[in-house]
Length: 447
Image (cartoon, rainbow, N blue to C red):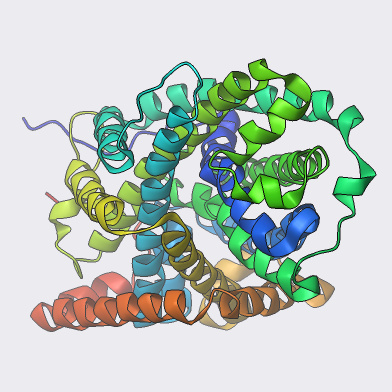
């Protein structure tokens, strides 16, 4: 008799928090903070606070949907396809898939950049070659199942948070007002541009909702994990950025290859470089580890309705959709070889913001589209609470525009390609796919 394979319910609140915050706190903190400072100057910490606004709003909207119906690939694909529209929902998931794979690419490269900043090593590792090795190692880890991923994630997450807290506490007394209140190079517009880039540092916070079938008691675990997953990074980001541009000039900070490590030398001495780089390793690898797992679950979700081959819902003996894992790793490999960190970052920001816009639309459309399900939801965004999706929608649109024409052009091309994939897939088995899209897919696996 064949073994029944299904997704394993093994994640508790710590696991979900570590996966969410671990994904969020990575290259976004240790690399993109420097890029944001090029535009916002010493007010990069203000950019972090502005960037957090749409993130908190989408976390509330997503938590309501996850509490209503926890399901794998829920936030990225299932809720949009069942509530907004089939095609726009598919494009939401399609865009999120590229967005998370973009994170995989950036964090793999960021690890090698910080490795090369270690003073103990004179020989520089090729960034592309080293990033490919990082990708391969964590692909093997993710192949071994979500529990293996979460154990590694918890260890890296706890070490990372402790290291960042030590950096902040040590650095706060060393802040100089002459650095902290230097004139912003591009005024408020530069601060907003910085916020649009630093959205990258928060992308991934709603991805806990894509683990709805692997969490214990998901209606409580997922919202709690998301709340802590966005609150912890916001506090740490703001304070770390405040210390970094308070102990050195923003121009020096933004031009450094490993900016946070450079800031550490100002008050921690030579030890600071090694200390921060080790913390950065934990942050970047925890981010990369979780991103590979989430990218796999999104491609799994896209396959569930057979628009893309149902082959990608096949599970190995560890309960991992391994073909979906290999597909995501292949796309990440292409981005590692072909893209720069800033451009890839702006493209993935665009994909996440597009998804957040669709997520807020779900809140507006849910009561009419699925009235019974909405009535049974314990927590509702209605009445005055509708200010949450309204602010979230408006702020997401504004920051999407700030990504720039090049990133938006590449993102549009990707979405057009997704539309082609959708309609080709639909044409092959139209009745079957429409029937599947009319159902909520919890527990649906194909052989």
